[in-house]
Image (cartoon, rainbow, N blue to C red):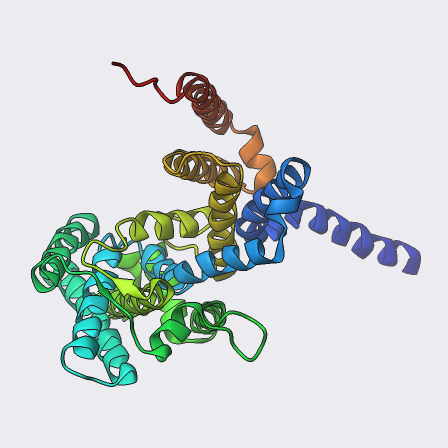
Length: 383
């Protein structure tokens, strides 16, 4: 009797483990996906250009490039998890930095106070975005795109085509300095923002409400969660982090102009989506967003190291986004009988069609890239 009793629980436990293996792996897919692609880049560059790519100066450059996007990727994780989007972050970064630059250069403000004012301006612009979306009921995509035009227009009006340069040491230290922990200061700032974002997501009501709002806004509202207020909070955080990125960019270049940071929004959204945060809300991964930022920075740096034209960076980023979104949809989609996980996703006919279609798109992009490289030589001058 005792033998059968001891065998049954063991057998049941083994069966339970078998049934929940894919479900236990699912939370790590968002992190393992970009890490696998990072490993592929490391192996490829280790074969093709090991001497140039793995130089200490080049690795430092990758970290500096990634650090610029870390604060924004952390904040964008909260925005996207709540089923939102923010296309205005490049203009927020530019406008707040332009105002900071004028306060320092023309009005003699101390660097620390001008930077603090820039952060407050970024928070205010995020607040405006949130109110436009929640109070005027403008869709996130349209509202933030319109505000992007507004903020960029203000930056152009204020700067009047000027390039403001040569800032105090404090600003350049934020953008390219070396900290006491043997890490570049912007990298340390970026890592600290991710640690803060992780704690905010995992250990606060705001983080739990963010997941709940993204999963089901109507149910969240019925349970007493102030949905609109928490959505505004997410946009305020996003605006503040965009302003911080603008300050970091100013310090990195030791210059700023009204047309700076034109592609911040696409790069940051790509990093967050590649990191596994769902565009449909309800699923967030701060660690995955960090991995996504590192992946895109490593990929762009690899293209530069291979002496591939600057314009191919956009092509490569777009292919990675399509592949990543399709992959996560394929892995995490539930099948119709209620079971889920990787095994169910792989057995679903719709997902197999999606995987094949993704393969066709990626294959066509590769063929087009090869053809363009073969035909895209420098033309001989005529006459």
